[in-house]
Length: 259
Image (cartoon, rainbow, N blue to C red):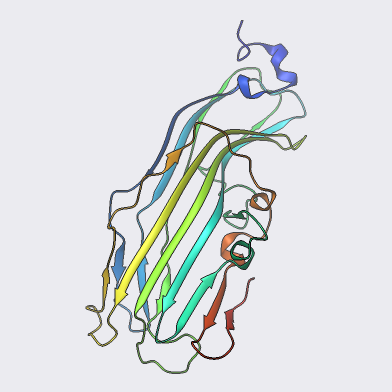
């Protein structure tokens, strides 16, 4: 009798007891879409990263709860909005090397990326195999002001948006009773955006995508990469972001501090 069917296995769930299949990780083969409908901001929407997997979990013992799902962290971030000077979105802890990764949780479901399709919770005792799927998706859809964000002027001066971010996404089984974590899958992916802007043109004709039009596809690793401690706790990447204004002359200014 295999461990998936054995009640004796309920006392301790090990990696070899969990079956993971049909792991998928893709980025839509579409170009980033640029929106110029607003006189205040340019918006752009990247294609979606999507990940999914099927999981078979063995019976769960009484007084034990397991959560299976996706955890994501940002490993690298370059985000430059260029005007006549330079405005920079950054994650200071990442830039200065204080941490290896910052959580990309939804800000509510730590450490999980989300709590709908992203996770499944199994409360013991269960007497049979649990079969389920978990999935997640992610993309960028920000707004960037046409005018310099630290001025009172409405004159459009935006000339370039350049963004390059890398992420690690883990499929994880976690025992909420014992805090044990079992990494089931590791995925690496990257999203790049490069937009040139001519602020002298009419609204609707200012911006164009340059460089590659499609993203490189994610890599599903054959090895399990450990999760850095900062990827499991607050703050998440959105709350940790700082908007710095770095003029050609003078001191940098924090326009938007971390939350």
